[in-house]
Picture 1: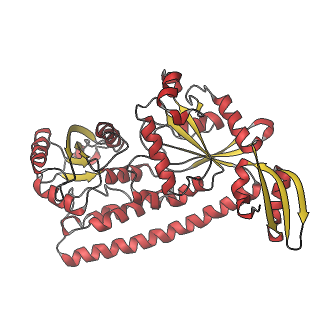
Picture 2 (picture 1 turned 180 degrees about the vertical axis):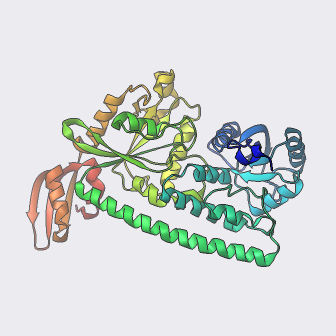
Picture 3 (picture 1 turned 90 degrees about the vertical axis):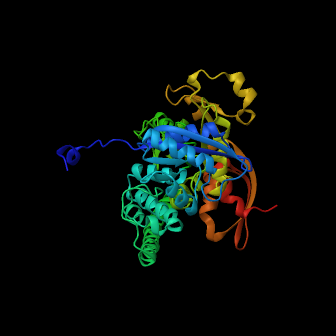
Length: 439
């Protein structure tokens, strides 16, 4: 081995071919062209050099190779011509797809799908111990059903929390047989169980933190949005924080929470969470559920939309769908249209995006619209009131005190085992009192 190989800290990038399939029976939020552009950015983020692209339209995927046999031949020729190491599919492949493709492509060509690529990016960007645990869990759960004799070496990759969890070729010894395969499956099952136990401890600690926050009665506002919409930049602008910002997908994984001061010294906790994306792997949603509970527990969601992006409406819809998946769709939401400094025409917004009529227009980069955003936050969290009548048992006297401190009590009656209150409360507190409503 040469000295250069031993000490070279910048090895050459893997060269990849991107493959997209437009399926007639599937109505994707993004067009195939836009989705492939996004896949290109994901590949760049993962440190891969894209050297070619291939696409096809079919009624449904080929059950063996996902794309048609003619396209496989074309792909094989393109891989050879471009000397590519890697083929990345824009959709999730099943174990048979991986096996058939690797058999037909030039020897040594690795096959990866969108899910595996996103998992790889998360593995690179997870900084906290919790984030690393979550990524390892997602990698192992993704790998387990795809494990075959041809690629049992991936157990070592996913087990270490790094490596490309979805690549099914690559460097590594092929499994010697069914005994080795079952042994590797057992190792993955054991590792998944251990990771879940560790994450349960983290979740318990997070729950204690949330209980302390609730007792402090400081409202929590969660920033949500498509990846690279500008959430971290907005957090930094509003709170003078120093959250990491980069013009790439999934630059921020670990949640960042900062205090924000509104009018008259009123406090708000503002938390930035992982960005969403179309076709977000279910394994990631499940693994990051503890982190995403910051969203579920929020009093208000600030949905940040990159209005300069041609797919802004589709990205908005992808985020809404993910909020439904994590059961956060019932939380009040204020839409924030970011990057209006990019020459966005107001009449165009009104004409093409009717769902954004009530949104706040801002530029997190320049500070445009921040005053209006702060006013809207103050209105929702502290000023806007809703009428409610509640029957609160004496065991929940903390709620009675909360009503008096933050609401307007029009009538209060103390019964044998409960207190009846009629009055108004801030919108953000409504879900706390909703279980005790009476007509």
